[in-house]
Structures are given as C-alpha cells and as structure tokens.
Image (cartoon, rainbow, N blue to C red; front, side, top):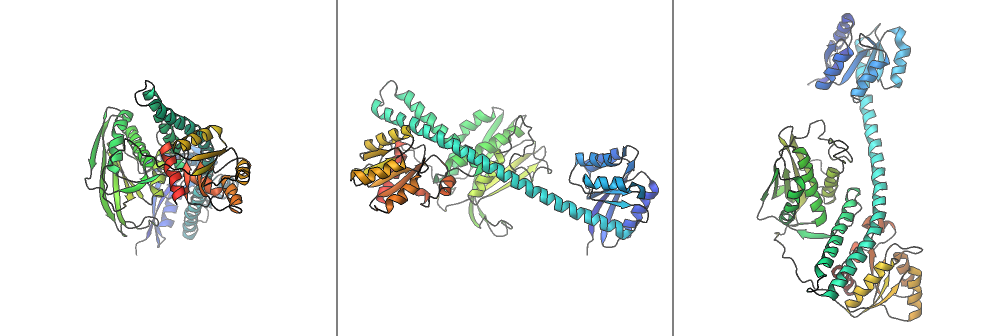
Length: 517
C-alpha cells in the first residue's frame, strides 16, 4: 500500500535541531514525510513560492526574524499553509500568542518524540483544511447575500425603466402607423423604436448574473446567432484579432433565450480580447455531440444525451493553474480593477447551468484558452430563420379591462388595444378596477392587469373578483422579473404574463392567446 506523502518545510537555523526533526519524521512508518530544510525566513518565502508545501515547521527565533513576525510574514504571502511553531520551553508565552494570530500548533523542542511531531502535523493539516472549508462557506454565503441584494436592486430599477421603455416603444410604433413609410420623419421614429428595443436588451442583461431575468425561449440555430454577432464582435474586439467561424452544417436546434446566447458569445469574446494583447485568432466552432454517463461523472443536473457544443478558442496568454478553479467565481478577476469586474464569466456560467448545460475550460499559459459550452439539443434540425418583414397582428372585438398604475403605459396600452379592434376600459388602480366591474354592468372578456401596484396587487385583485365573477380571462403585465412576480403570490404559469416593455405585436399575440385559452 502506497504511503501518504506529506511535504514538510522545516525552517530552522540550528543544524542539530533540524537533524533531530528529520530523524524523528524518518522513523514514522505509515506516512512518508518529505522534509526540505531552510535556515532563514527569506529562503523560506522563496521556497514556498515555487514548491509544493503541505505544512511549515517554523523556529520562533531565526537570523532574519523573531517571534510572531516570521509567522505573520508567511501568512502575508499565503494563508493556505498550516504553520507549526518550534519553540523552547521559555518561549511558550510567545507561542501561545502566535496561536491567536493563526499558527495551528506549537511544539516544545525539549523531549520531542516522533509521535508528538507526527500527531501535531496531522492535526494541523486537518484543522487548516476545516478552517479553509469554513472560510469558503462563509465567503459563499456572503457572496450569495450580495447577489441577492444586487438582484433586487436591479429588479427595482428595471421595473421603472421598463415602464418608460414601454411608453417610448409603444408611442413610437403608434406614430409609425400614422405617418406611413413615405413620411420624412418615418426613418427617425424607426430609429427611436430600435433604440428602445436595444435598451430592453440591456435591462435584461442587467439581471442575468443574479438569475432574476425573464426568459423568452425559442428554438434557435446557434450558427445564426454567431453569424449575426460577428460584425459587432469585430468592432468590439479590434482589427488585430481575426474571427474565424467553423460552424456545422447539420447543427441541431437549442431552446434558449436569444439575448442570453448573445451574452455568452460577447462575454467570451471580450474575455479573449483581453487575453490577446498582441492580437491573434479567435475561433468559434459548433457541432453536435453525445454525452454519456461516463463523460458526465459527478454532474447531477446534466443528463446524458445530444448536446450542441459551442467552442470559443483564443491564442492569448492563457490561465494559470493557480486561478483556473476560480475563474467562474463572482467578482474574481486577474485583470485588475481598471479592466475587469469579475462578473463576465460568472454570467456565462450561470446562463449555461440554467439550461442544464455544461461548461469546461482548457488553458495553457502562453498558448491560449478554449471554452467548451454544451447545451441540450431539442432533437430538431435547425434551419436559418426567415425574417418576417411584415408582421401580422391578431385582432379581436372583445371587451378588455386594462389595469395599470403607470399612466403613460396605460395610455399606450389602451391605444394599441383599440387599434387592434378591442373595446377597452382603463383603470389606474386595483380598487378602481373592482369598482368598475361592480358598477358598470359591462361584460369583460379579459382583465389585463399589472402584477405589482400600490395598495393592492393585480393577483389579489383578480382573487377578489373571482369570488363574485367568473366569466373573464386574465393576463398580466409586469416590469419586474419572473422570480419577483412569483414571490408576490402569482401562481399562474409565466405564459400568462406579458413582460414589459411590450410591442404592439407581443401585446396582440398575448391578448389573443389569453382570450382563446
């Protein structure tokens, strides 16, 4: 049976004491103690930087350090190593002080035995391991709390922003419909609507890394997403980086949110740009792959089957082995505060995991880095989508009660619904809507209501109305994220919710879908 190997760094200026420690550790049969001896603190620090060390045996009195100072100097360089102090009996007070600032144990040199020193080393390594586990758990908890708080802040901001964008986008579309394509201002208004749509994408990206955004899922050809983004990527990463595409002709479809796929590609491209200071080649490739049980060992949420593999390979500086395990951690970056936020790869990681996918990284310093992203296939052969140049809006003649506390959104929504043929009654609050239903005597085919409003939420309003009236269908609008909506008690499926900002097309389809359900 192979013995456990423990790398010991002995920092001791007394050669006799050093020889005694070596001899004691050599006698231990069940553990192979590999002892490396240095005589001062300076040499110790250089050795730790370049060599594997499991534990440090540190003499309290050295030629270039004294007492606790030497311990703290080592801890400044690395907090990962367990340190055991070697001390004379008269130094016990100092040794106890060293325990308070991070030493794992201390051993009195007089009467030292092989059992004493071996037990101290094993306990020190074990205790340090538990300490690091606790530290990581605490850090994970703190980070989770930060992400939760940041996600809620982003959710509140996006709610107000989405209301504004609904008004801007909606009014822009209404103006376009009245102007006609030959009007001199038609192109300018189109640009306003397009700018609002891009701003919509930004609000959704703001929520991604905290996992609080809403999804618009569709069957996508990943090749199309990469091709569409290539011009943008070329402008973003610079002319000195050549983008190469190797895309499979028979690529199967994936069911994902397109904006999130764009985020993955853009984040990886920007990450590659930062790694290629002197330029080079950035290659995007796609293919269909099969992942089996043996390939997914230890992956509880990723199931065997057919996956679409997106590989992004750069020719940059690579990632050191020292950092490779940390690159997906929130706010971890090796780029410095001026260049990196530490959320780019975290965003990529969480998007992939949300789709029960897998992400791997292969990197060699000075050669380059390759990210492999596996996303579940739908089993369908993906073909390039033909863009719809003239959208068709489903219409109707039913009566709709539109409940919205933001007046600008209410005005836009009512005008859109009326243009689609519906009879619309507008209420600015839930209590006003309840009063309207009770007193007007109208038959409402659909109540289209904002979810979160002052005084009374849309869902609570519907619950109250259902107790007396059961003839109407319901659909919801919201500028908040799906998760925040569900936290407020909405139990209907998300398919019954129209996220803000909405266009006339999305409003028309959602209303018709709700009425026909």
